[in-house]
Length: 277
Image 1 (cartoon, helix red, strand yellow):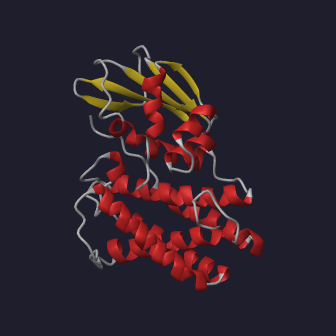
Image 2 (image 1 turned 180 degrees about the vertical axis):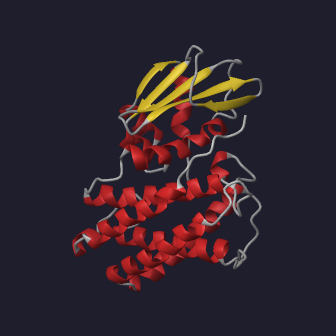
């Protein structure tokens, strides 16, 4: 079944505008606050977002290739390499002021959004969405993945400084819709009878319902379903974004969620990761 396109590129400048407004409002104390992103402060996450802009502009727009300094033979090798790249950049960025970081984010964010406006959504992307199990992805999915990166890191900052603002239907729903594309890949090794249906819901008006259905040897993601549901899982938005980005554990999420039907089958959804980790 062909994936239905998720439109996100028109939201990139909206999200960036909110980010710049947020960063310019922060006090020195808030810039140094710890976040759910393990050892990173608010300032470190801002630096990481800048790195994302610069990498996209260099690799994608300018087609500047920077070869890895090691062999990448499997997924874990790639994750380890990316984690090291991220850490090196964040450490180097500690010498930059919050004002300069914000100025650079504003400058590069505009170029970043302009670049993605220029690409053909249906040609093959430079990098696949590996966490969804894809070896080749279309540009629309790559852009949606990039959108989730920008969303999740801005939300981590907002969570740390207690400034809500992007858990809305406009901004959160495309984010969680993109994350849910990893559900079939998450269930790929789960044995169940053909026709088994697992429903995963995120509550509030910003959320929605997703169904993963066992069809022969594969699991398929659907937005609508008229078959009996074998297992259902409901999470609130705060739990969902933290869980699927490795901010909290499945055990923590289980205590916050609501379950119905086959509990063991539903718990598989709590292991979904829609980030490179």
